Structure formats: structure tokens, C-alpha cells
Amino acid sequence: MKLSVVTPAHNEERHLASCVFSVFEFAKHAAIDFEHIVVLNRCNDRTEEIAASLGCRIVREDARNLSKIRNAGVSAATGEIIVTIDADARCRTIASPGLSGSRPRDHPGTGPGIQGRAWRC
Image 1 (cartoon, rainbow, N blue to C red):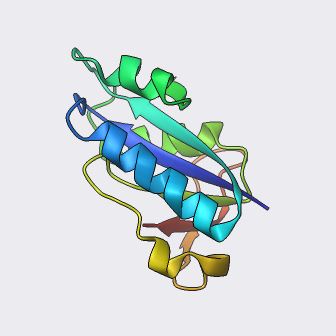
Image 2 (image 1 turned 120 degrees about the vertical axis):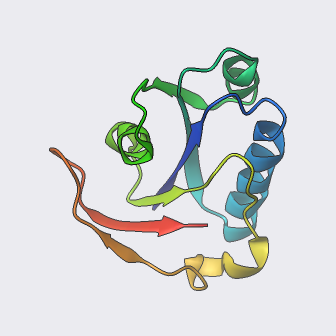
Image 3 (image 1 turned 30 degrees about the vertical axis):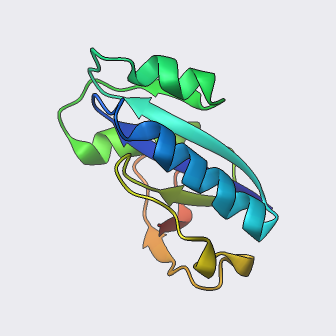
């Protein structure tokens, strides 16, 4: 099983590294393969540089609509499970074994391949 984590980011250089590290710890604790996708939204700070240096996949979406920004990351995701997390948030490892503490919700999708279950940290 692979986890895809999607983080929308607009000028998040102050918060992004802590978010990415918390996702890494979450995945390590859950012993799950994962990818972290950062969706850059009209950034003019070091957000892209930080995301790339931490091994995140970069997606760009300039829309002024958070749903479109998140869905751009979901479209790029390759995992069976998709989680979204804001750049100023942190994943908690206490709920991660088998993702049993997470709450799934239906994700109707907006295009080909965007359907199934999604989680939010």
C-alpha cells in the first residue's frame, strides 16, 4: 500500500519543512511507502526550493481556488490512499498504525482517476 500526501502551498517557507518532517515520521511509524506532493500556488518565496530539497514532488496550480489546488495534487498522486494536509499543520503519529485512527471520506473526484477514498490529517 502506498500513501500520497498532498500539501497545497502559497508562500509557506516558514512552515513547510516542519509539515514535511511530520509526514515523514507519520509514514515511518505506520511503516508505509509514501510520496509527498507539494502543490505550489503562486509562490514568490523559497517554498519550491524547500520542497525540492526535502524530496517532495512539485506540482504547480495558479488557480485562486483551494479545491482546484488540492485536486491538482490528487491528480498527480500515485498512492492507493490520499491524504491532504495544510503546510502549517502536522501529522500525529499516534493515529497512524494501519491508519486506523484516520477517518475516510468519499472523494467524488473531478476528473479521470480522481475517485475512491481520501483522508485528511
